[in-house]
Amino acid sequence: MPKIRKLSVFPAFHKVAGRRVVVVGGGEHAAAKIRLLSETEAEIVVFARSLDRRTGVDLIAAHAEWRAREPDAADIAGAALVFAAADSEESDREVWKLARAAGVPVNVVDRPELCDFYTPAIVNRAPLAVAVGSEGIAPVLSRHVRARIEALLAPAFGDLAALAERLRERVTASLRASGDRRRFWARFFTGPVAEKVFAGRLDEAAGEALRALEAGEAAAGHVSLVGAGPGAEDLLTLRAQRALQEADVIAYDRLVPAAIVAQGRRDARRVCVGKAKSAHAVTQTEINALIVEEARAGNRVVRLKSGDPLIYGRAGEEMAALRAAGISFDVVPGITSAFAAAAETEIPLTLRDTSSALVFVTGHDADGDTLPGWAGLALSGATVAVYMGRTVAAKVAARLIEAGLGAATPVAVVENASRADRRSFTGRLDELGRIAADGDFAGPVLILVGDVVAAGNIVGRPAALAELAAA
Image (cartoon, rainbow, N blue to C red):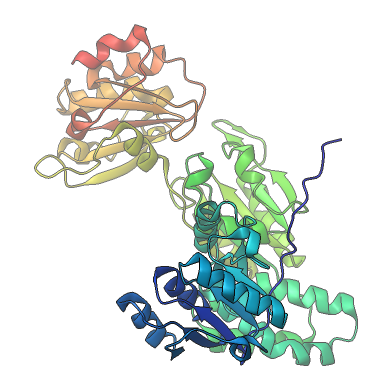
């Protein structure tokens, strides 16, 4: 059994509202403490014989009080906290002695052995706060972690927490049973109330919460059509991550990596509704019925799709089914594979004096004997991104050449865009069929056609296809 690593500190939050917090020092380190404390309701008192310009600016902005002298025992007594930041070992140690004698917690900058507490990196979403600490050992690491959390927590989380604070007594009075209160708050923080807060509609959010509380009716379900992006976990949007964390049920496609599905709540039910060309494990009609049924049961459902839901994701049919059933839904965009493929191969999808138009097409409409409808756009110089076109690559190339597109037009074929096992090949339009056939592709393939491909940087070609890049 692995050894449990134990902390040398106990994380806690000090109550400082309306209380005096002392900062000793007039330089850079003192300024940092003043800025940190300015995000609280503490009464900040700064002791220093002089202040440098930066500290003076921060002191004014924080509405802090400056006393141009060293502190004495009476100044320290009764304070909530003391920060010794004079950048003088002798002065800081004297402040430490005064604080210890008064029984006031003290932090001495850059002297962990003299600290009763450490200042964490703080994510402020008042009244919600997240503090990240490293026991004073690696403050830079704490700041990096804080930056990641800042990105995950939209500023509106503070508004949501504030609304919950205003309603707490009313909820306690209306819902006597702890289970009922727990279910109410779970829905409050993940349901329509939260959605309205995040959309900036605070008055509507408050009204929604009160209606739900007064009506006491069963929670309504909701469906989010979420784009999982091209496959890389770090290309999943923050909104998509939040939707996954709030979902009761996740219905995911075959191409969505397991690592992204796993970002949902641990207790969320996962349903694979994967489809492949000509091999639908679950039909679209069955998927529509599934998400409607789950939402009607009061669940929050994430319909997780590879790429973007609105680009060859059949989202239109699902939205129509949800509207017909009266189910609320939203759409969370995802990074489509054309963008991921272009980014990895450094191909500018639009390029001044070369191509000012970009067209997304599917190879399926090139499976017949007629010229696909988008051929004219390719002839006019647009960059064409062909989805699901590997099996008809030869037909696509032949018909475009017959229509007048130059046989030497550059093409790129990218497999598994954004993933660790990605591969990319380049060549001419008249070689597209050969690239698609010889590439031995197993993953999803994206084909780019147009003169902009020549400006890219295709790497990782197998030796057997290396000669195709010479054109």
